[in-house]
Image 1 (cartoon, each protein chain N blue to C red):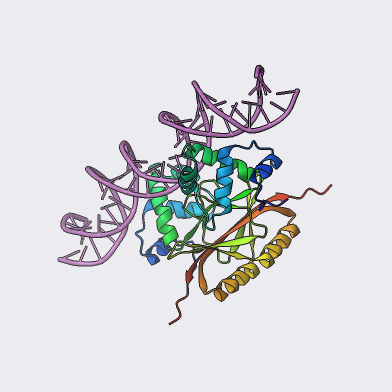
Image 2 (image 1 turned 60 degrees about the vertical axis):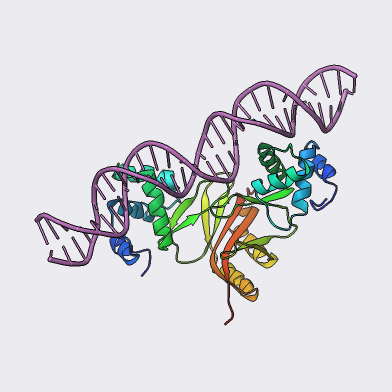
Length: 140
Length: 140
DNA sequence: GACGTAAATGCAACGCATTCTCATCTGTCA
DNA sequence: TGACAGATGAGAATGCGTTGCATTTACGTC
């Protein structure tokens, strides 16, 4: 039962949430957004489909979907939060400091190492999130 | 020339900043804070020494010190930012989700792996910051 | 298909961290 | 010491996100 199903209604029901047009719209938008939109952008895109959607509902829906594990919130430094459909593997998020572009590099090896290091300290990981700020190396 | 000098005045001059009482107070507080205070806490501690310090100056000083690389800002999920004197090695920050306690686990190995992975993609790392939310494993 | 109820919604007001404005002050350098 | 760019304090402004409340709606039950 992956979050990557296209049956959004069923995914909502599985999470114990009611199926509403607003939630379907937001889930659909998140599903085919290759970027990581923030609440404002989501509102704008949602209104292109259903102009009744309010900002409060965007936030409440995002919280509900996050709680249900369907989406993931990305807290970048001094920026508004961005959201993505929950990925199947762990990712490190890389921000290109020149363009602002967000890149993902899957890195299960690193996630595993970290999990082991913490277990030795007596902790289990609930979530992990890495923000890397990087710059393209220009080959001269 | 480490940020871990006790000659704060010199560190400020090296960074091209003016030496002011407020900056010296804030640097000293950050230096002997084992925890990671946020702006409010810093203001409170600074006022215990010099009650004229304002919140605006705390924020401006933190930005300036961060810009200069003397301190580091920690952006935790849905919390106000916390600050620490720039560590010499890379750290992963772990938050105990039950107590809110912030733990540091130095992990040069992981930092190195990540640096290499990004280099293969044509990027150089400017900064990296990991937030792990974890829970103590209770031994029963 | 209509009904009752709890959940979800829109709107506006709010909270809080951070930034800005501006008048005043001060560190630094000649 | 004097000049002046940079720094400061106080409070207003900003911006993201949340909440209270009245209204609407999804959905199980008849």
